[in-house]
Image (tube, rainbow, N blue to C red; front, side, top):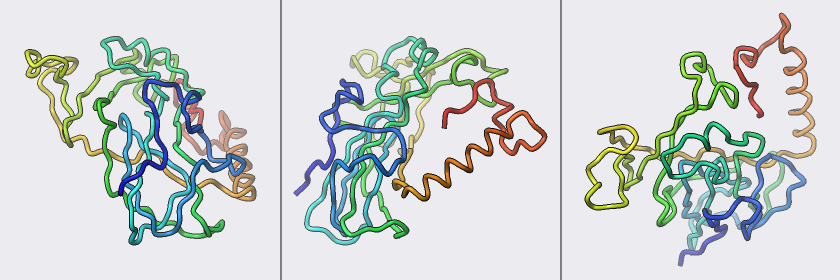
Length: 233
């Protein structure tokens, strides 16, 4: 039997979902589901990103369950021909996670092994996108060469991504954004991890605060000073 542990509606914003989503690793965020060690997950992702916190060691199981996820921007990027949504994307609220999922009996410091049994797009939502941020919003290491926002939408057919327009059989073989391109788009988990303990969170914050304080000085250890826009995370 297959059950859905966490479901999402891609037409709704992250804060409108029936099961709340979050976008940070923090011990005070309450779990939205729980599993026993050995339960099996049939993981379903949405639009090039899958993310969930506090998963379980995969052993044998009498049933499978699904975890559905929104894309990393929370649905800000649309399946259309304008790159304005990339240009104006709100990067202060991204990287949405499905979870946390409590593993019954797990304790801080335990090793959790996760095996992905199936990754794919949600039914009737088989598309993804690639793009470049605008220099003034997001930027990147090559922003001087590519300062403007761009976007290409891709249709997902099995493991393949193509720029074909699938809304009409007549247009099936015509290119949409990047002419004649098809590639094996190996779907990846995006972000996945475990929520930190209070002690570990304090350690993280102290480490990051030191790095931020060093920016612009001879002691700087990161490349943040080379970017047009400083990373938010």
